Length: 102
Image (cartoon, rainbow, N blue to C red; front, side, top):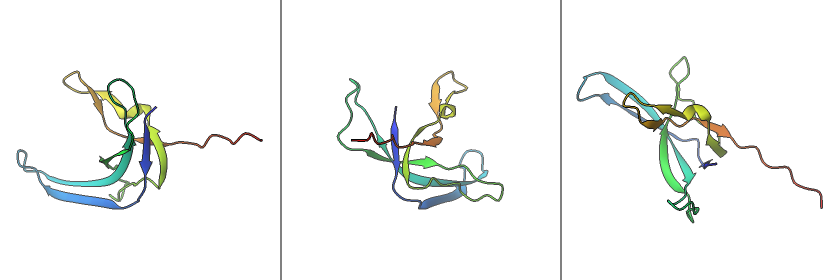
C-alpha cells in the first residue's frame, strides 16, 4: 500500500493557453507527500513532495483533499492509449487502526 499524506488544503491554480492546440487550460494542484519505496522494496526514510491535479465540481471549483493520510484508489490506474500503465491519482482516506485494549 502506498501512503500519501496531505498536510495543507492550499490549492495552486495554473491557467494558460496550450502551445500546440491553442486551447485554454485551467488546472488546480495540491501538494501531497508520498511515502515511497526503493526498487528493492525498502521504504524511503522520508516522504517525497509532489503535486496532484485536482478534479473540479460543477461550478469549476477545485475539489481539494482535507488534511490526513490517504492511499491511491483503484481507479487511479488505467491503461493509456499507448498501452502503458498510467496513473491519475485519486485518493482514498485511510482509516486509523483501532487501538487494542491494554
